[in-house]
Image 1 (cartoon, rainbow, N blue to C red):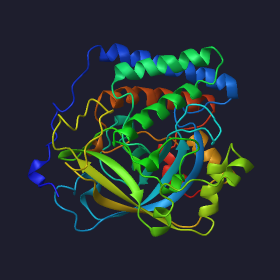
Image 2 (image 1 turned 90 degrees about the vertical axis):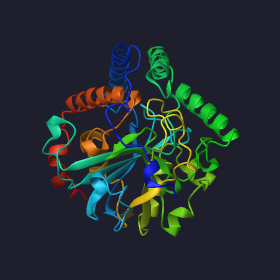
Image 3 (image 1 turned 60 degrees about the vertical axis):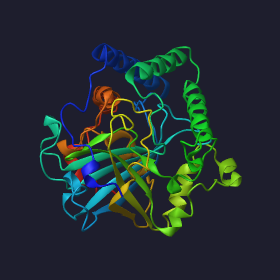
Length: 370
């Protein structure tokens, strides 16, 4: 275990504004907004500009561990408390694509009952903390300059009426194959269609965030033996062939008809900005320099994971935003700074076009969904 004196202390100089960051960020947000409008015209319904397809919406519980080391008892994790949570499993593309298409999968967590000042002034009275995770440890386009190139490419394909998700899929698979070849990616996270069982994956924050006095990345990995057994497990071809558009929804639903599941949340603390940069999300932080340390357990009981009520709630009402957080856990780096603008713009458009209120003020009441 790394000595706690080796961990980098957070300070206001951790982040570095990139050349032309404001201009590039605005171009990215404007492009996303144009694609949002194209998707609205396609579906006659506003969807998220990323992770638009839901597979399950779960109610669960997060228990912060007792007797954590002092350097881990930060922010939300400063006391051993139990919180209700809402978790959404999703596919990363900004369009509704078949489950058979290889893609990153998402696990968004909304922790309920988190008291204290929030980062965004408009959420000062909200009692939630969000963590957004993906089953891949890095952001392939790790700086906004590269992110803009990707986004403009997606918009160009969308304008030509093509399935622009295939472009993102091809790029993601190529990145994965390169990283796997040099030992920087876990084979269980390979993106060859349709990928491993989503409940057996490990999910990562990809980008860095403040962790109280320190800087960290977050992950969630299987803990109970039944979900550990799903790690890297391929989905049966028979299930895929029966419904290639929605088999992920089915396998999650089937699991939770009777099954329980436990996962463990961990924090990887930064020790050196040279090898664990904040401003380049494409660099994987080496775990031999700083391993993930357990901070909390997530548990789910048997439930209906995608009832009509939950589907509408997840797609039209509920919003997840990494900036819905305590100041002690604010996202860091230029990709996350541009995402702050993108999340706000996309969420307002989606809720307005679908004539739905935002979720944060009524999330405690809506947690009682069946």
